[in-house]
Length: 432
Image (cartoon, rainbow, N blue to C red; front, side, top):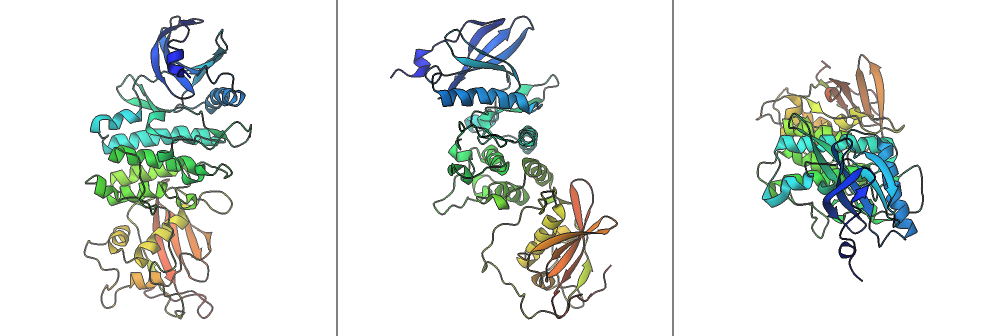
C-alpha cells in the first residue's frame, strides 16, 4: 500500500477564502496545513483527516468529535476551532488556531532545557487549558510536549495552548468511537485498560510526565520493578520539593496523585519558588516504618505549631469538595514519623540543627508524639470556628489546621494518643 503521505502530497490550494501555504506536519490519522486567511490577513491551521481513513466510519466520527470537543472547551489555553468543512473529494477538515511559536517539545530539542520559570509557566498555562476541558467533562488522555503549542504575544511572551483532542474522551457521552489510546511514555497506567473509567487524574499523570521531560530532556522511564530514578540522578540541582511534587503527579495509583491539574501546577510553582509543598501521602507498606499505636493510651500532648508557608491546594473530601487541611496534617505527621527532621523542622520554622527525635530535657518530643497517630486511620475534618479546622484521625489524635491564604496553610496544634482509656488526651506542654 502506498503511504498516505506519498499519496496526498498537497491539500486543496484554496478552501473558500483560505489560501494554502505549506504543510506543517502529518501523523497516522491526520495532517496539519498552514493556510492564510486573505480577508482577515491572518494565518490559520487546517487539520485534515488522512484520506485513507476518510471512509472508516469510527475514525471519521472521532475526527469530527475532536472539532466539537475543541469548540466546546472555549478556553484561552485550548486550541480554538473557527470552522469545519469537507473537501470536494470527501475529506473532513477543521480550521483552528495557528501556533507560530512551536511546541513544548522544542524546549528540549537538541539538548536544551527550559529554565525553572519557563517550566512553571508552561505547566501552569497547560493546567488552565486542561482544567477547562475537565470542567466540560473532557479528559485529554494524550498530554505530551508536542501537544502543548505556543502562540507568540506582542510583549514577547507566549500563550500555551492544549492541542490534539483526537483521543480525548467526553465523560458525559459514550459514542463507542473513542479508545483509551495515547502516547505510552506519557500515558497514565489506567489508560492501558480499555474498561477502566478515566477521570482528570489521567491528565495529571500526563502533565507530570511533561514536567519530567522538560526537566530531564526525556519522558519518564520506569525500571522493570516499576520505580522511577531520582531526578537528581539525571539532572543536578533539582530541589527535593520539586522532585516530590513531580513524582506525586506520576504515582501509578491515581488515588495518590494530585487530585487535579490545577493543584499540581500550583504545587510545582511553589516548589520552584522554594516553598514547602504538601504532597499527597505516598502509598506505604505496613512494615515501612515503626508504628507504636498499641499500648500508648496515656500521655497525649498538645503543642502550638506554626508552619512556614506550607503551600497546598485543597484536597478531595468524601463529598467531592476539596480539603487541603487533611493533606497538611498528613504530610506533617508523616515527616515526623519517618524521622525527617529537616522537612518537619522547615514546617516548624526550626533551626537546621533541630532534632525532632531527641530534642533534649523539658522539650517537646515531636516525633514520639507523631508516632501516637496512625495516619492510615479514617479521618474527618471539623470546622471549629475562627478559621481553624480539626483534622481528626479517628481514635488516634488530631491536628489543628488553618488557612493562611488561598494557597497556604499553617498547623496550629497537634494531639496524639487519643483512645478509649484517654479519650480527651492530655496537654504536655499546655496548648499555646
